[in-house]
Length: 314
Ligand code: UDP
Ligand code: MG
Image 1: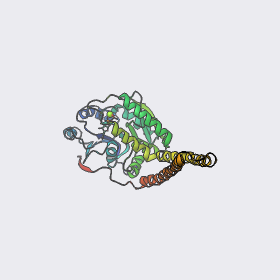
Image 2: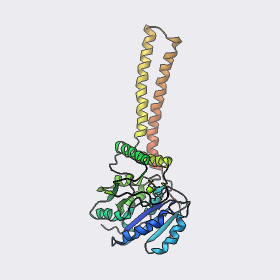
Image 3: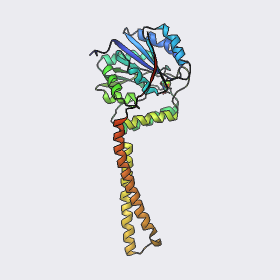
Image 4: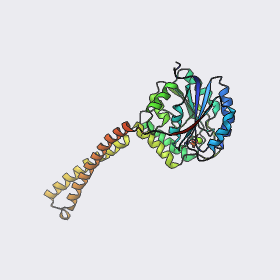
């Protein structure tokens, strides 16, 4: 099933954002692990607008393996997923692997995932068996996993793990259809015919700190939800409809009361009832409009994901 555009067996894509300390450690473990596979390969580092010395560190390490390394430097920070897609656009391998730069994803596990692709799976995802992250991160991830499971049609076990292997045609589809705020594991699972997930080791960050704060993490998970589901908009519409029904009852009740019991405080509450009805009808309408705008929004997002500043290669 060799794709005509693939000239190598394997491409490894690694996003790099402020990783000057972990890069040398990664180099020590990544290349021996890849050489052991006995395949032709390349490693594409995407410098996602790092503000530290990551670019210089990569330039100084480049001569160690100029035969396999490429460094794509982005103009500014675009986020982990858009950065990875910038790498996807350049891959030459038939199998593509992603992993994090901080050694949380052990490079020694790559072989296991590649073997699964060779057995016929189009995606092999790692499940972080013993996840080594802060407990608040694990809580947010669990919640996002549950929401995704309930309100999208993507079925997977560990959406947050970036240690994954893909068949080339999946990557080509992601590049073509990923949109401007992609969540790669979810898009890939949506496209895949025969995905599999297996447990992989997960380690503590080798150096430095996580690049994700609460805000970045929330934004990423909103990307995930909004690109696969309009349930949030639908909830709004349904709340509006529920309120409309209740307000209608209130209007009927106040009307009857007015006829049979007489007006309460000069008709103020009748007025309230009518206002509730009108407001809730408006909310339903807004929700409905939102439904349509949501759909249009999904169609028209064609902003460029990243801007490339420079590519370092042999
Ligand atoms: N990363 C990136 N751009 C960003 C944030 C992170 O390229 O804006 C990279 C980072 O260098 C690392 C990977 O994405 O290789 C995962 O980031 P991090 O380890 O900070 O996330 P966590 O493991 O805490 O989820
Ligand atoms: Mg990490």
